[in-house]
Image (cartoon, rainbow, N blue to C red; front, side):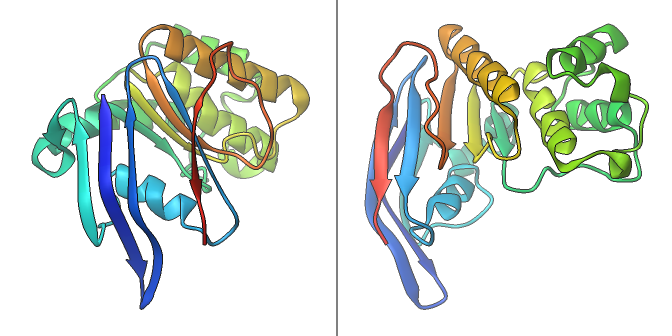
Amino acid sequence: MLEVSQLKCVRGERPLFDGVGFRLESGKLLFLRGANGAGKTSLLRILCGLSPAESGQILWNGQPIAELGEAYRQDLFYLGHHNALQEALTVNENLSFYATLAGAVPSLAETSHALSQLGLRACQNRLVRHLSQGQKRRVALSRLLLTRAKLWVLDEPFVALDHAAIELLANLIAGHLSQGGLAVITSHQSVTIGTQTPQVLELRA
């Protein structure tokens, strides 16, 4: 369970949001909405412990995330605007590297399956620098198939994807939720994920 209460964010001298709170239980999805500049990415980074909040509290399973440290990070998968891929490594090497950081060592068969799911099997031995932007995004998203994290925090995950890839990603997220996972997502695109009605949090600039 993820619980957020009275969260306040200030960047420079500008307040982005104040008093933000929500409670997200196992199997649930939260869509974060708001205009550009409202603080959506800032809120996601705060949820992940990557940026400090001015005030407020974030609890994971009833405990402050700052106290949980690595235990929280093991339960978390974050994908931001940037794909966070090493351009000089191959696709396979990138997936192995990030999986190892997350405490998992996927087999070659698991890696191949993940890439096949996203239409990238033929690219697994290519250097990332030689891929298109859409292919790079799908490589980053293929990490979802290799993670054991319970909480997925995804910032505009559908950007640079074609219709088939969008549908596949929506199904991956729905499958994660059906197994008791949680997801917090921002998206300018209207995408249906599973059959449940998601929670919606609107940030106003």
